Length: 73
Image 1 (cartoon, rainbow, N blue to C red):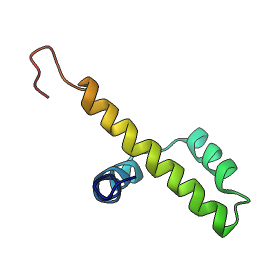
Image 2: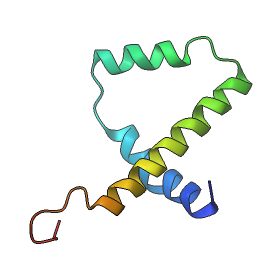
Image 3: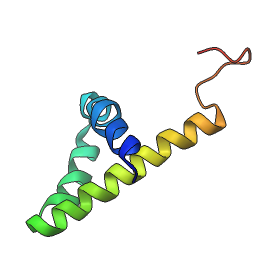
């Protein structure tokens, strides 16, 4: 990821995702993913999450997700 996407993820996307409420299913799936990770593989997991979240955000921008019929938020 380039520097802008890393900045975008750390400054905007990650805090937003961390603030979302999670139900028991979300917590269970997170524990399955993070349960037996070594420090090295944990870095890989975090990199994959950051990459996917940043590119999903960009896809939303490109496709106009969240815009109404008039093009306004």
